[in-house]
Image (cartoon, rainbow, N blue to C red; front, side, top):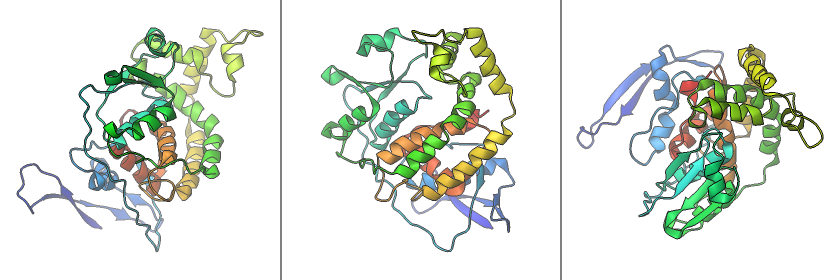
Length: 335
């Protein structure tokens, strides 16, 4: 199958375009194989590029494995209509950890609403900065300098931004639908994802909150690996927690272990989630909502795991929302 994809060019005349032609092999096993690795980002982000209002959208992945299925019907749904760029005289500031799904919720909402903002990535061992802002170590934190205003809690921040006319049209993000199937799916993979994701966060050495050893050790100290629970990992008033040397050893062993059986399980779970997805632009019928804010923020960290096979609709959904919200995925640093 030959596919011709328009390639944007700032120098072309109106009505003209450059194009890239590549070849895809479609097999009877209803899978797609792309012979040249360099072609993958073009295919995977094609829908995201089409839906982008303007500007350059960086490819989200260079080595993504994707499976697809053939259907006799195609669900067509309109993507979210992004508003004009909002640039306040004094930019809002988000204090976040890159890996934190609650922080990603707010970053995604700000991107979807097209609000220019500053991002302050906190080191994971930085207690002083958030404590000075809100009295304790927590993220995300939202600061609005023009109002001398600071708040925390991701959903409260999103509600404030989406109901303030200074940040564009209000109530653009629909309320949560209350779906129990997606919540149940998230709970079913919690242990699996903690086992795979947490060692990789610190092992990459690339996430801003883990640039220094103190930040990596702070995360390991406070985040247990399955099958351990938080009380036995951190300790309580009644029992002592695990010593740091043991924690470091468990993280190293988790990173060194063969993840094949866990990734196989995860791949199967992603197929289940793919069936729950309404379309490639939002997960629930009706439009972009807090369902997407929460789901995508949690799924993003899966892209730090090498070898995951994404069902086609779910993979395009990930790329579409990444482009829409201007929050990159982890594919290029996957381990």
